[in-house]
Image 1 (cartoon, rainbow, N blue to C red):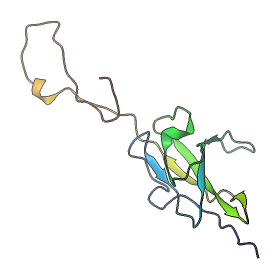
Image 2 (image 1 turned 120 degrees about the horizontal axis):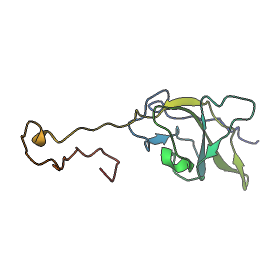
Image 3 (image 1 turned 135 degrees about the vertical axis):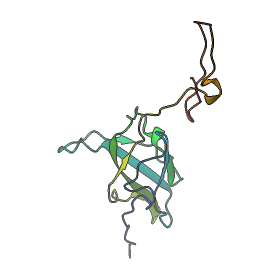
Image 4 (image 1 turned 180 degrees about the vertical axis):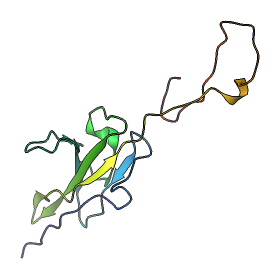
Amino acid sequence: MMPSIPVIGLSTPTCGTTLSSINATISANPALYALQYEFRLRATSDNGPTPAYSYTTPSASRFSSMSSFGITLQYSTSYTVDVRYKISNNGSDVWSGYGAAYVVTTTFFPVTEIDPLQCGVASDDLNQTFNMLAYLGFTHT
């Protein structure tokens, strides 16, 4: 008797949330005997008959980064994400169907501020350099 392949989905903390960063980690519910997981993503607004999907590379991990889709994600944008997995069945690898699709929203465009240590300091230098607070995930300020 061939075992049925249950369809899986994203883990509950991921579903319907605004992500903490543009490269946040998403996760699938664990699937018994899963060999690999593959996530797919589309802009939620792309809901026509043939939406443009981006895919992660199949991986043994049920965790993936939003940056793993190989596209430039936009801030404050809703994306629809779903996942499938592969198991071995009688020596053949079989992919499940994609599970329920969930909407996740990327974080708002990051903002920062002038370093508070420089606020209220008088200067006669018209070429004064101001420092801004670093924003986590940005390498240049």
